[in-house]
Image 1 (cartoon, rainbow, N blue to C red):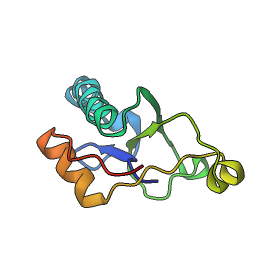
Image 2: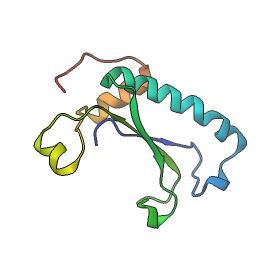
Image 3: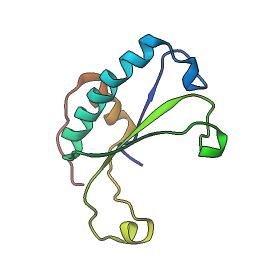
Length: 110
């Protein structure tokens, strides 16, 4: 889904127990920064924030990461009726620029 951001530690970690104290302390700061940028870009204060631990949880790559997904009140479209989601469109490059510069680019039709 567009707008989905993965927060990954700089060092490759497979389990939560491998995270250093510094990584645990840094995580809330990074999370709040990402959430703030996404809130501005997508005009929302609603998010799904989660982590998949282990292969059976749906994790497809063997590393620890947190997913931050902006959510908006659903408009009734074919996608939302069939899949119960609202699609937010932004290119991966645009999202990367937003996160690296902490600026919100011009709004496009959502």
